[in-house]
View 1 (cartoon, rainbow, N blue to C red):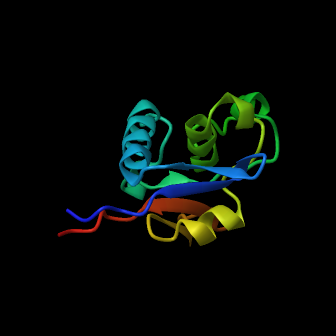
View 2 (cartoon, rainbow, N blue to C red):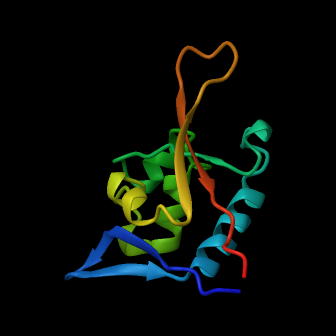
Amino acid sequence: MPVEKPVTFPYANNLGNVLTVSAKQFRNAWKRFATLHRQELDQDLDGCLPLLASKDSLSDTRAAGHGCGFDVLCREIVGACHWDTMQAGNQFFKVNAHIVELFQRSRPGAPRRTKHVSLLPAPQA
């Protein structure tokens, strides 16, 4: 299997050093997160996560009921020193288009479309 490009967190920046994790670590974290929050996630999304990006602190984001969102997953990956910084912004999706895709979805009866994130398949050998 080919080595997949790592995942970069452009908003987790320590003195010019941007945090990266391997694609395998990111995929494993996604699977654990989705399993942990399976009761809160829309089963129609087939493994996708709601974006739920917020500039609020992590504790305020969770208190607002957005603990199952993709932004919270990213904050958990980057660690405590970046928990209160939104991680799932535009720059994140630009540099990580090889592994995630942002899309909008409308639900029957819902007044507006909402943003979700899908995990792209791993490259095959």
